[in-house]
Image 1 (tube, rainbow, N blue to C red):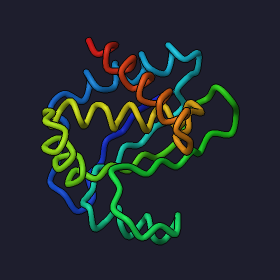
Image 2 (tube, rainbow, N blue to C red):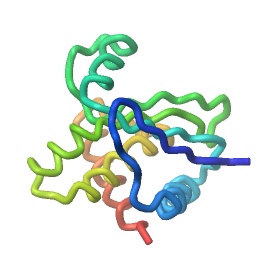
Image 3 (cartoon, rainbow, N blue to C red):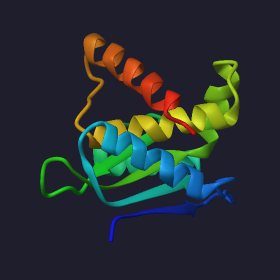
Image 4 (cartoon, one colour):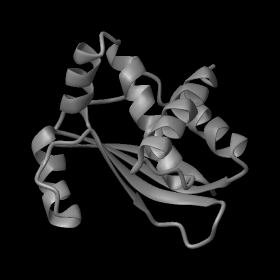
Amino acid sequence: MPSIHFHAEEVDFNLENPDYTRHWINLIITQEGSSLEELNFIFCSDDFLHRMNIEYLDHDTLTDIITFDQSEQSKSIEGDIFISIDRVADNAKDLNSTFQDELDRVIAHGVLHLLGFTDKTDAEQSLMRKKEEACLSLRP
């Protein structure tokens, strides 16, 4: 049975309404013509994600999100999305946004990566921002 799980590592964090978030994530996935298998969101600290960034991606930088695609078939979503709660909070302040809006943007960003969208080039980044906005507009 398809499922979305939320976990915390090195932070004391729980989503305010996990069922709402699950419903919204499912909307994003189905809107893009894919199906959900299993998705794990791991909310963590800057330090935790920084260590992962070095170990798995060889990037010695802070980041707000790392996505690991575990899908074995196209159009089938399965993966792990690690999100730094510290980065989300700092980015929300820097962008003059709310914590929840920034968290939702980052969640959508991770799901979009699993749906095949990338953000390496300027054109890809522009499309990713548009897709993030479209995802945010799907929130119930």
